[in-house]
Image (tube, rainbow, N blue to C red; front, side, top):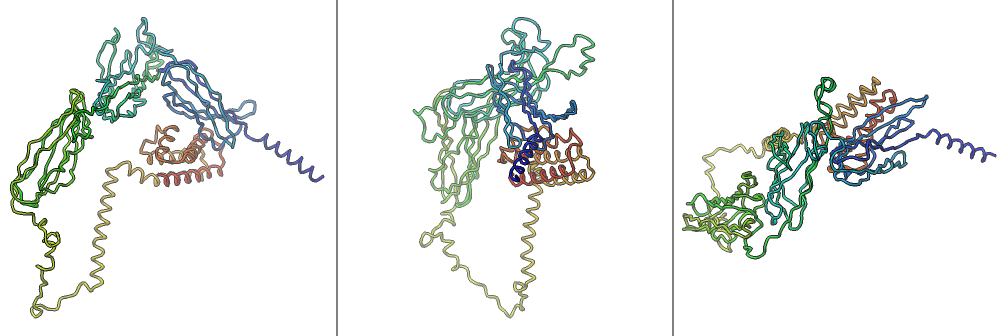
Length: 597
């Protein structure tokens, strides 16, 4: 009888607990399923529960086929027929990277040991725009955004040799007013060495006719790229985001409705990928001293002083100037220079942009020590490069440099018995101990036997070392803003947590959770060397992953931030014990982040 009673009591308890468990729904909706690449699709992920969930992790969804803004997070509490629901929404603005059929999702959510999954959403991405902006005029083909707004890339050549310079010019072409123009995504130039030549700070357009239609054409970016291997390479597209006018103002009511032009459509446009064919450098005629330089160059060499004593240094400067990837130029070899001790050169570059290309000067500074006196000669310095315009190798040579070296063999190089330099072999033979007349001198004070003397001697270098380290640290902090931010991050976070502790005692839940949220965001911004505002959930996750932070720790941070965000917009739902748990969890996360970065 007792066993049956226990069984039915356990069953009743399980049913009660199941009835009291939070009912969670996870949904995904979009504002449209057919759009163009320029028209944003708004994706909303909703987490709906009949209880206030304390820790809600960020959902996971694959968005690699889209340019993404967000998510924007919002929370709300609703009561209908005495039933309360808590909703957390994450809104993403998506612009497709390509046209055609795309599938969005499914999104997954791990919560309370269960996995929730939304349904996949099929999208159709078409060319042009389903919502043409006003003011573009009327006519065939002009009712689509693609005929009025585009990004194009121009290359000065698309068939090159390995290491040959390709100049890319990115332009924004438009036929109506734009605002909030910015780079949405920049290419990574995989397979190329890239140098930035120009980036626009504001639009400075010129009028140009494209396909029989006048456009405003503004340069955006100028890049010099150098392929590092042969084959077919593809430069990824560059994407631009901008705000378009919603409509023209045809009446005074339009002006009163939107006096500052704040409304409008945000569009993302990208140029087409660029295909570049890269040829290998020819083997025929390759000089033995060729080290990979491609371009057009000149060579100069000079030494000073031209008259020195044997064993004194001579500075030899070799300058290579021209157009090409100057940072990849290797120092010319001086291995065959006889009669001199040659030290490794010091290299420096001076970059220059001229005639739409990248180049400049690379200087190598050698230190030469002549070993013997007499008339010496630095033979011609040779430098070989490949001229891609002529399609052949060229070798440059400097004029020989005459030096007058005074004296015979350099003293430090004159050998004694057994090949040991003579001046080293004579140490101990030509130096004798000087014995003063003790009668002429009084008994000296033997300071070296004083403990005080040695104490002072020991403290002086320590004091100098300490002062040097202090000055170095101060200068480093003044010159390295990122380092200063990282060093102050923990102290600033601790100050905010102490302020949150005061708000906890006052029972001010919204202000308390706002301060916890600010403490975490400010700490992340200082450690990631970025602004506290604008760090979206996705951006934080990517930056923390790049810093080597574990995924579990990233998700824990997002859970605390989400919990704070929810509590700020739903005051009164958090008890003091729950608030204390949030504060303790935030302090643990800050300590864990500091240990990992």
